[in-house]
Length: 222
Image (tube, rainbow, N blue to C red):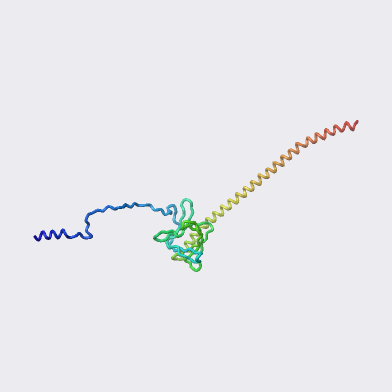
């Protein structure tokens, strides 16, 4: 009698929460891996630093924080163009995105050796905007590295632009010289044609004079 009661009690004991029942539940939705493109696949990183970015609000006449994260200089493997890209930490939202162009300058922010400022035509919001940026680093060394790299990227482009301008000026000068020589050739050709016409007309005049003399001579003898 007692044995049957014990067996019945064992059947009524619920399974523990951590006990594996062996049941398998298939997922309702199967998620597949999706390749995420950042737009940086065809670029190489020249510089990568942690920083905090500010933009100057002209209406409020004050600096406003744009975001804290990683600022990079990225060089395109095909075109060779370099851009500055900064994303906010964790959410990776873009807070600065613009090319480093010739004649762009960067300078230390007055009174703070860890910060620097520059102007740029920025595309972070999906449209070009003139922005005045200020970026602050954790150390003076990082700020100097940023400024030096910025200048190293912009200066060679200035030299290339000047060389292209000089080459264009030389080509224009050559074209003007060639055009001048062509004009001179035309003048010379015209003068030569005029001289030939004068030379051809001279014998006709001489023959006419001779004939007149012959007519006059018999008249004088008579």
